[in-house]
Image 1: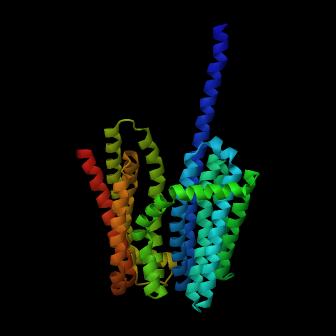
Image 2 (image 1 turned 90 degrees about the horizontal axis):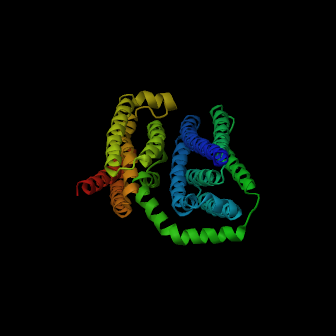
Length: 421
């Protein structure tokens, strides 16, 4: 009788484990697919804008992209990560408040974008207006995509996350084709992207089946109070050597220099897409390593592998810089292959940083990590002003590379010292 009772229980546990395994596999595939699809879409958008429009539009889009990613960083650390750390049961029970919190974040972004557009319109500068419009569109895109990654996985709808990425990719592809054929202006292209993300936000909100504005406001205030300081620190210590040199370049030099900066940077993005795909899998393998020494050895081996991949890719891009620019943008940026070559060291260092980040989080070395990144940002910003005035886009790229060098070298030394101590 005991055996008869036990067999169904064993079978039920096996089915439960199998279901959990399949659910976990579906979630991983959806999240990795979402990130790769969005990254490839953004890469294609940059190329399409560079080919279809002039230097002002490409420079404006690059600035909007940087601003969108910086604000997304604030959102990730203050709102998204806290949501990811809460239980699925909590998220399901409070989904109306969670969606309302995101609606408030988007509303604030829209209001900020509208204010920037109003100010830029009165400045009588078309480039300022294009930059403000790009900021508004990129804020909608990146804030909504960041929220969807956390919320849809948390409520057990990972395949809808992939569907949302496909919607964004399809809209971007259609708008890019229309722009390349001369059917729409840059402003209409951005408007189409923004409208797509509003539809995306409405669709995600409908999944909640409820909206609790008061609870959303309380959640936003609580998250901002608890995590806002860390969010600002994390974003500021990264943006200083990753995004701010471009903003400085756009402020003190002609838009064509910012356009060259963005055009050259986009040609290095396939390396980042490739390695981020590897990094997702490698972080999962790292999480399974129980032994500390074995895990550390695994990470240092990855540092070497990622460095080799970065150097090989960078060498190929550097030697073929002029051909890559011509292939991507036609003759618009002919003679500026030096900007692509200048990006190579920065992207090799970025490659190395990915596995190091895993070890930082595993050892909880956040204070030292943020201090090192803060120093790197401060040096990069200070160096950017004279370098930009002397060497324009090459100077801005050099400031980024200098910041990456300090951040990666400092982090590696901190981790190596801890290992040998």
